[in-house]
Length: 128
Image (cartoon, rainbow, N blue to C red; front, side, top):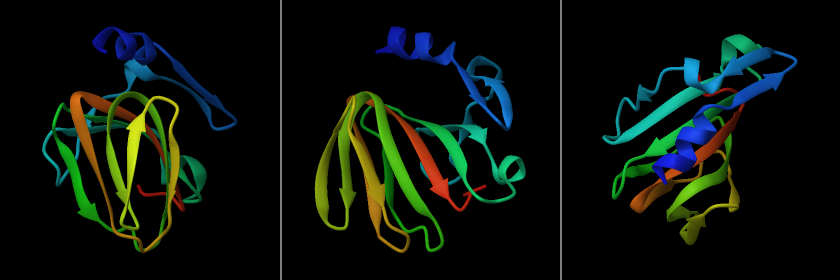
């Protein structure tokens, strides 16, 4: 798992908003949930608030507890690892290749398995 994400961490995000090398972006601790970190690939400042993109790393057996984004639609693309997302009361197993949509105003949570979890999260409009 570590080798996979280290390889991915060498990636580049290319868009009309510019180019950002993943390795040059800091992991930012989540302000609420222990063991959760984010790399902000595109922020509100980059997109005039329209959307934001983030890499999310959840440590083994840690969680993003139940919460609601009142004003954002959120999508997840699972890059690596395993876990479970609770979305509108539905338990969705998370593994590489799984994608899901979390409607605004919907309670949801994400729980990483024993090997941790890596997600590409997108917010419309921007989260930050």
